[in-house]
Length: 227
Image (cartoon, rainbow, N blue to C red):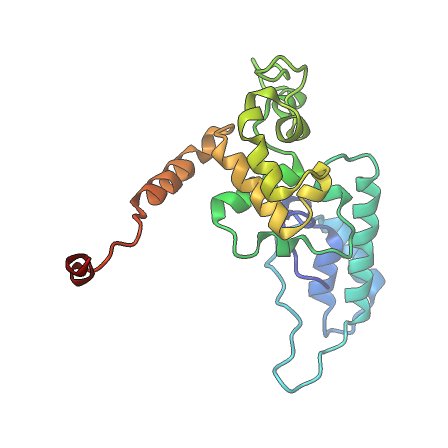
């Protein structure tokens, strides 16, 4: 089974099949009995399974029947949920692992990218959809709903710096911008720099301070005397 990741396997949604896979491995018990037991007990937070990697020089261990069955169940339920979802993470093909999008990315930018792809974040549109008291869905620019798509693509409040986003991520549709590593990371970096969500303000300030501290290379004293 593929390594779990928070986009596709959040801990709060761990299914009984994962428990069956862990309990049934190597025991040779009745799978139907294990399924019935897991369904009866319900989902439970479990440790992240270790990657099925063989030592160097040894052949990769083949997946067991229960591993293949659990992965197919995950895929079936994921695709069923994705039918009516608009967020980028639900439109990403099952065969394309989203983990590579976060590779070598600073933690705050990785968090921003995760929020942008799932669209579960502190924009007014989402906050109003979950009935947060005192929150209207409209954007500060006057648009009826403040969404990820609106902020990235159209909001006039960010027109001045949108050219920077286009130069780094390209004039693509939002789904493509958030589905390739280079463009996705550039989009997350731009989003943090806009200061739209207060939770990233400290990281933004630290980045700006570090940029100011980077002074250009100074010539050596001997070189200065020679000049």
